[in-house]
Image (tube, rainbow, N blue to C red; front, top):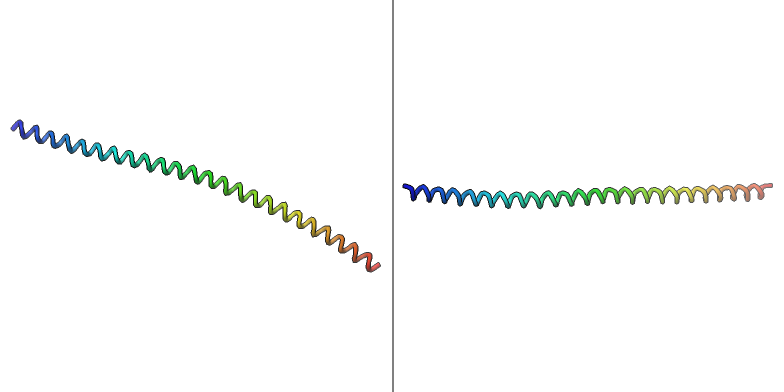
Length: 89
């Protein structure tokens, strides 16, 4: 009887050891998942900032470029009006 009890307890201990090992592996997997998610969040944060900066640069350049074009067009129109005025006088 005592021998059977000891065998049963040994089997129980082995089962508990396997369960603990499985839980350790699960915790390690979850740690890796959390690390991967942290890296993904950091990458997204950097990308979002970079994208915003690039969009702002593009808008700034476009505004400046459009402004230069408008100024050039205004000067050309004034020149054209002046020449036309002189020709008609």
